Image 1 (cartoon, rainbow, N blue to C red):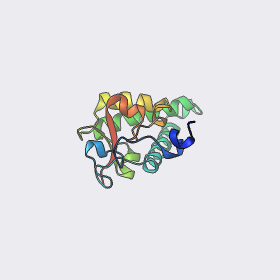
Image 2 (cartoon, rainbow, N blue to C red):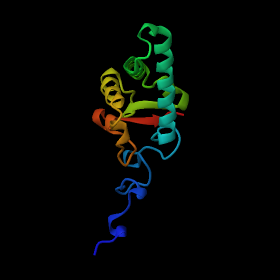
Image 3 (cartoon, rainbow, N blue to C red):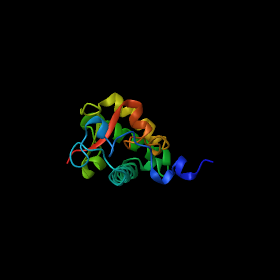
Length: 148
């Protein structure tokens, strides 16, 4: 008979194929600059970016007051421009993070556009792999890393 120990548990997290920490299989360090950004830092950066989008939408787009889609549109444009130009949003900058390609370069506009579009769909970031990359990062072959 098959037992629970044979099947594992969702509490154990995603199965790791020989790696001890996220990013190890790509040669990324466990901690510090170049390491994979962890969930708490990602969440704080996302909340900061969303709050900034709310403020901008409220200040400059008051004639469309109350539109949640307008807030989402401001978030989308702000994220694409910031990640496209600098590889990071304001929230990423505050938390010391950067969106990079797998070879360590900033993402650029094409990847930033697709990544942010998927991020705005909400579900892709909630489906991480063993290296804590959501579907939005895997789709464009990027990773969110610590830079300080």
